[in-house]
Image: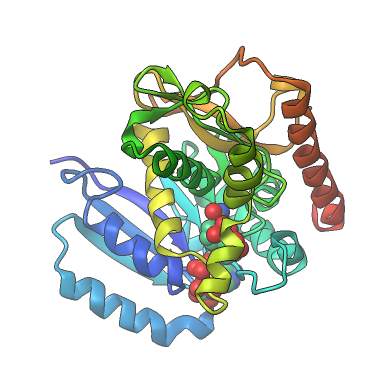
Length: 328
Ligand code: NAD
Ligand code: LMR
């Protein structure tokens, strides 16, 4: 029997977690033979919802769920955490951009960065989901100086999955046959979904989609604006089950490795690759192995690509400047 892994999850009574927690406890993230301890954080007002959540988790009688802790104290939630999924934050509504949430959500990630720094396991893997995810990950990392910056990531996997799915539908091919998709930049509508390197059954996707008009006027804007399309379709509520699924995919690849001859997109601390200066949480194509990621190098980029990537970088710098006063 393996020893249990401690997974901290914030925003535990929110809508993403209502999909996420049951799947994690069923073994969808770490495997059907991996016991887990869930350490769930939400605000004090969430207590009645916590009670309901706990009853439902108990009623599932999950064989892998060794312990279930609920708390409103980050120092309890992150104690000895091996994995921290930072979901808890206010979602945007209609007519808002994700960066409009910075003032409301930034302080959450200051407190949680400090708490992770104080009590989490030194090898903890942190995924920031709460929006604006890249800049919240930057805030968290900056408040956790004793942890390795490579252990922090922001979620672009939902965008990556959206891009895969659009191409699969266009070509009427299974989603699993598509490899080497990239979504560059910020989890915002400046992100750059880039299918120029993608392959489908070892053939270049570009050779099958000669139609630039579909790429520029359908594929790219559909992926960039999918979050708002869902909010509008769901009467003001943002994506939840697909976000939970992306969290599981992101963590699985990070921990167990990406597929052979493939990569994924992760928001990580830039190291200067592809001309994106160091020090922003930016989405790059990465391969993962043995619990670590590596940025895929050597992709050919046109001036058009670089221009799109630069715009997303500039937005991240503007977001960082907007929260400068919140940082230590
Ligand atoms: P929700 O409003 O249903 O739930 C958010 C939960 O967070 C609530 O239970 C709330 O009480 C809790 N919370 C607030 N402050 C907290 C704190 N300080 N500590 C712990 N918990 C706290 O929202 P949701 O739909 O679950 O979405 C959560 C976040 O994820 C939003 O910011 C949303 O925009 C974002 N999101 C990101 C992606 C992505 O791809 N990166 C995708 C979907 C949603
Ligand atoms: C998404 O991409 O679905 C989420 O980030 C929610 C949002 O605000 O768009």
